[in-house]
Image 1: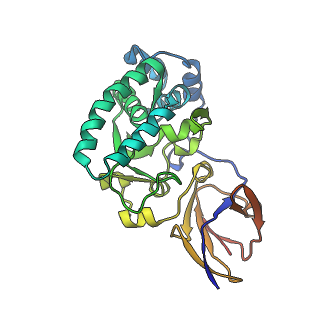
Image 2: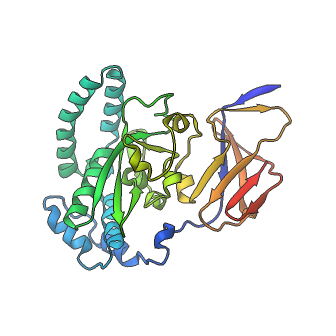
Length: 304
């Protein structure tokens, strides 16, 4: 008998995360400490803040790290405003001109809240990082596009709902999402819970949950929008453990009772496959599922 699998299947891996591979020899300790030492610095004078964060660092990647981490540690997610934006997007779903007009006016208030209260939605996070990078002579852009979560998923890409950053380091573009990295909102209350996986994330992994309005920011990833919104939704742990899901490649998987389902993912870190387990959730109830045919070939792990 066939059925549709709607419950959440999660691969749990017990291994530590690492820095982006291009900078695996870079020690970010000094940059991280500088960001922490400047905790609580106000936003009244961005040039001074940028100077404090970057003056004692040599490389652009270290400077960007200090800027990015400071924003993640000092700016809170404005959950109330985030809900307001979602409501307006729904209201103007069929009128993009009206939404753009409302959004342009709304952004003025967004930046006021950012500088006075250190609270922002995604645009504020991305804007602040870009401005601090500009002051540090680092090329950085705001990327607007679509993000997928359990609450924002849709069957088409109509109105952009998210913003993040692209930064140029050593003549190569990288992607980062500070607002998703800094924490989350639970019942309207912001919980700071830093996830380092969104810092210079692998472009293929990043495109599992982020799709830009301008395809150039896919960074050579040939992903169509139809593939994007039809694929499985990934969560923060995927970034934290630096893994790229490859199969199943659709959000809803049709299964046959008593038949096996194949799972496959690429690991960007070296993990111990004996610590992998498959967890099945129905509501708040958690169940461990038996794994068979577990094998690892180079960086690809498969099981059924």
